Image (cartoon, rainbow, N blue to C red; front, side, top):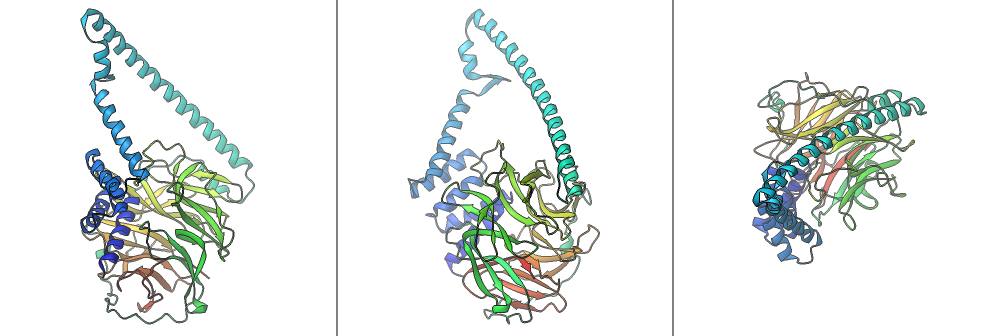
Length: 500
């Protein structure tokens, strides 16, 4: 593998880890990039977003500005660091609620002591009043929200009664399968048949495939993970047909096969993400989340029984650092007919890769605990009628799962997972969609195997692997374990949805 390709792979894995909340792993990837290429402005910017201290951020931003003094994002971030540093010096608390600056203003003499006591009393009283006011506001807001949702459920005229009632309920506490992680996790339960190791020669082309495979493909020159969207038509020897001109990722196909929803990266304007929809022929690209009360929307999945999508995003009133790359993404549903938004989760975890089951009664999702004893990523299933969460895996940080997809009958899930000590070596798992099931590692080799998706008849599994040096699309016959190769180019090819 060339050094350029190695840098691209490291950047891709670092960005993926950063977006999923795995800051330590992301930091390691970006550090490797700048060690190999200390003039990589983008790597320094990403590294600044995952390091732990302001001093480290300042070093990273300084390097980015040395490379490109006109980097506006680096200038803004550096200005924010300077302001925060100055504020910390001035507002260091000497006693709770009273800063050193306030003490200096009121210090000196008996009158100063009296004034200081008055200030302390006012601060404490104001704090208590503010807390009481906030508690009252929360109660009133919850009552108003509950009333509005009940009215909405009563007046809604589309066939989603069970889902609407579920979405108007509070988010229940997640139910784990066990209080202790299973180590090693399910991956070691079954001894898989190894798939062929890289040989440098392409595997046979898959014959007898039907339908259309949707994905994203191209050379990641911008090192963001966003590539041109394509459709692989098996009738036409799997040729990659471009879908419009947008740079995107994680596309999904509607039930009728006529629409594609995908994550769009607005690199030319806001450096933000949003969800767009277009026709299968690439026409009529339309933003779906521009006027919705969310920001940074990503990873859409169509419901096949109602005209709605599930995705992850931040609420529009998010109070965190919007220039960061690690966020507590929550799960939302948007009904495209009624233009109605519903929030399914409301906690401190970060969610990614939500996927509707074929009957839309469940949503498979990756839930990442961002701190504490249970920090790590696992596959969870959300019941859309009750919003109850059930942990399908419980290995926390020992293994990191990603991108679950349902089988056509809704009985099984496939996803990828890698061990903590080898983040560049994901394997493909297939298992029944219940915690008591036995996972099967159907694709296991030294390469990185990711983004698995079932064929419409459930007989095959498409996935992406870098076993040949680049991420190409492979197809496995689940009955015989035979592996075929759909693409063989220097492009990065990833599958995301397989329609009939």
